[in-house]
Length: 218
Image (cartoon, rainbow, N blue to C red; front, side, top):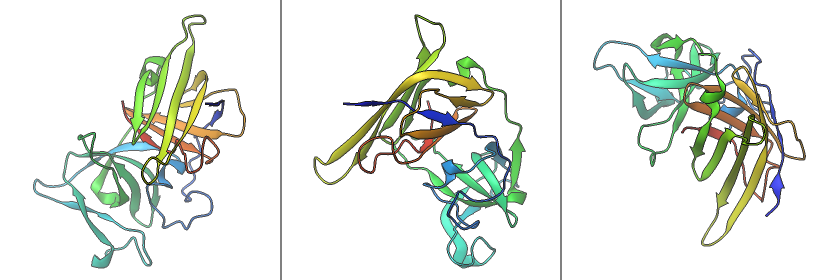
């Protein structure tokens, strides 16, 4: 299999706009990692309160009951958030159960207490990160003492129809963002917040439908 070397683009913009090509009202799994200004937040409110996720269909997000999703959070839950839009914040929640899928949608901004982003260290980045079938490994290069990354991404179709892609290279940190200097067709940007590694690529990082885009956890 061919290994793909790529560059992580710095994720430092404070723009409140949606990912390129999408309406500002969009907040979805595939577009969330393309956002910026990632932060952690804690759900606040009285005991017993349920904060439902809000969809992004026509006219949403809003207080209209038709915008509400069944999924909800309770006070004390922590979520990863990006931009604000009309009193809501786009949020990604990963449950503790590693077999459970994430929930992505809008949450009322008033229900969120933002947690200041902690500066990352080399140790923060190190480890094996997983999202769906994908994995990324960040470790120390024995010969240079610097960090390196390698990983594999998958797309699984029907039956035995499986496509994959590889990436590898020198791993250079820039605050909470990171970069791999070698670049071919694959382009990826990334940012770390606590134990979440946000990764977004340009869909040119392997076989058909293979993508490293997602929110990874150790």
